[in-house]
Image 1 (cartoon, rainbow, N blue to C red):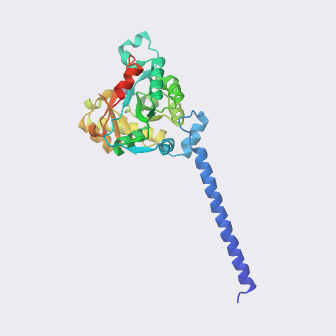
Image 2 (cartoon, rainbow, N blue to C red):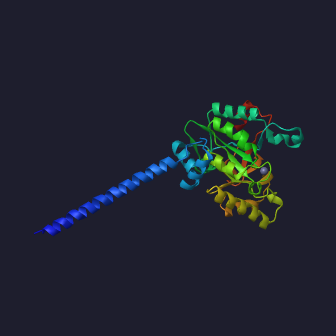
Length: 304
Ligand SMILES: [Zn+2]
C-alpha cells in the first residue's frame, strides 16, 4: 500500500520529469530558432555588422551547404565537363595599364557576360559544389553549371564585380593573395571587404601568400606559400579552404603533392579548356575570359 508520502514523492517526480521535458523542448525550439535566424540567405547583401554575427554563429560554409540543399543533384551518364571561368580585374582600363590589358575587363562587358550566363540558365557553383560535381559526376536538375573564379584579390572585385554578381544572384570565388590583404597593400581587397562579401555569398580560396612561381620555388617555399595562405584564410574567414589557384598557372608534380598534403582538394590552373575529373582534381583547366569575349563567344566556349 502506498503511503501519502509515497504518493507525494511520485507526484514530485512526475513534476520533475515534466519540467525537464519542457526545458528540453524549449531549448530545442530556441536552438532551431537561432539556427534558422543565423543562416545567411543565399547571395544576399548583408550589412557589415551582421557579417560578424553570422561568422561566429554559423560554421564555415553554412551558406554553401544551405545552397546545396536546395539543389536537386542528378547523376550524369557521361563524365561532367565543368567550365571554370578565369577572371582578374573588372574595371575600365587606365592608359598606363595597357600591358595587362588582357586581364582587365570593363564592368559593361562583364555585366553583359553575366547577363548572358544568367539568361542561358547557368547556375554558379561554390568550390564545395564544384568538388561535388566533379567527384560525384552530378549536375543540378535542368541547370547548366559554371564556376566563376577571379584571381589576385584585386580591389575592384568589391566595387565592380560583386554588385553585378549580386544583381544576377550569382556566386563567385576570389583567389586571394593573402600577403597583400594582410599588409593592406594598395590595390588589394581588404579583410573587412572580404568578410562582408563572404556573408553576401561570395567565396574566397587560396592563391599563395606572395604570388611566386611555384614551379621555380624550392620545396620549402612552396610549402610555406601554400600552407600559410591556407591558414590565413581558414583562420580569418572561419572556413576550411579547399581550393588553390597556382600563381601564373605555374606548378610541378611536387606542387600538386604538397597541395594535396596540405588539404587542398581542388587546384585550378591556367591550362585552357573545360575541367574534368580525368585531368586530376588538383590540376583543373580553366577558361580565360578576355575583354573581347562576347556573350555569344563565351556561351559557345563553355558548352561541353
Ligand atoms: Zn594571380
